[in-house]
Image 1 (cartoon, helix red, strand yellow):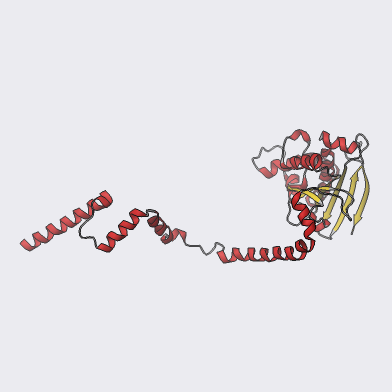
Image 2: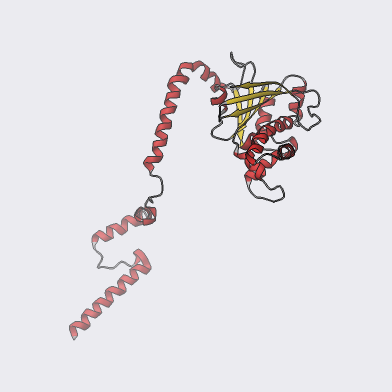
Length: 303
């Protein structure tokens, strides 16, 4: 019975010391702790981040899930991208080193042997519509801005990255041509045509495509008998013309157009059958025509 009492006493004493050690940390260390444990506690005291790092590494929450992409898979995309970049460097950059060195010094889209005039291109952000690929622009030939549905907001709408780019291209780079390029199967135009004008929305996309509302209204008035897909195709071209007119709402653009220092063009890329339409705004003081459209010239069809 005495043995049991002594054993219980020692057990209680150990429990008390262990409890005190937990509460007071390193200030109350049990004498029963082995030297290796003391060394571990000492290392943690010197480097408290080690314990947190160990806990993080061992946490089940950090294990990769089956439905998440593996690091190797993501890296593989960049290996392919690296291969493309090194191909560009070898086949284009190094073989035209003098040209690229000039481009590194200043951005000035100048006349080339092929393109007789400096260009700014306003194109859609759609991944299928790359102006440099479709129209063959080389580095240094065109200043490009891309947005949803290749829209140009009117001057009174306030600042956006599109009219900021216009200001820089026209007033600083002094480009000679503005080209608005639309395309077939445009998701932005479909969003515009499907938009309920009376519904207030917090969607960034819907708020942006609302810039094209005049083109939508004209399309609804002239193509109401067509289905939605056909109306969208009609609006894709109509919105380009509306953007050409919106460009003239910027005083510094209209002044240059009036003085024949700047030309405004529209383009439409149909990637279904790979054709391209091009036309030029015919500025005659006022480009508005009786039906609410714009006067154009030099229309061409490339197929």
